[in-house]
Image (tube, rainbow, N blue to C red; front, side):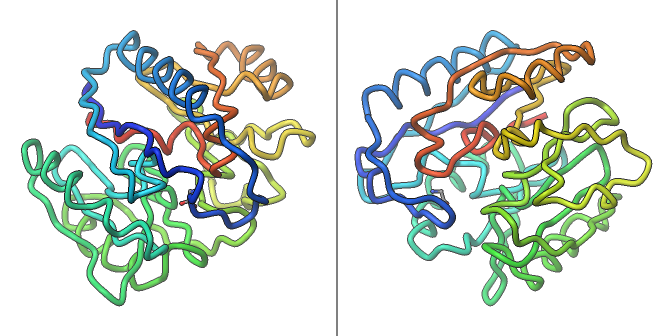
Length: 252
Ligand code: GLY
């Protein structure tokens, strides 16, 4: 498996924030934690292409939001936050080397963080950064390729995947305060510990789950279920409202 990632902008202090108050971000510490994240992806077998940061694009490290990539195609997103639209050209150039590229057009908006794919099923959380038109355009691109795209309403957290993510082949980890477990019939739902609302964002690489060790109780729950784990610390980028899936686009 390959992955795209992007360095952290020196301007990250000016990142978009929706549900969090602004708190100082220690750029050196963020970069050290990010380097560990990249090393972890490599250890799990990903060939990582690390794209350069741009000091004028505070959120550019959160590359997940810029595209939805399936084996057959890449769909360049149109981020809901205008400040993030300049992130696309560098990502587009990288994707053109590996996939045919389509795009979400105005008035559609779509952030990759609102898109959860489990095999051929795709959920799109609409209501915050992603609008219904963006979701419909994504469905228009992916349905002909055999994907079923389900548009769902999402409001409790920044991105759909701030509150849920794939934990196993047929398992979803979620925070039921933000994400309705009824969205996932046929899948086993694992709930985060109620004291750890942000623990629902984990990154599945192959069979391994990359998890944030700050969420000890949820990590223990996943460990008890026998899921193979890689435990990292995402504390600094979490202050910029970024989770573990936000830092990469996996190309499977
Ligand atoms: N800071 C991440 C975002 O709001 O897009």
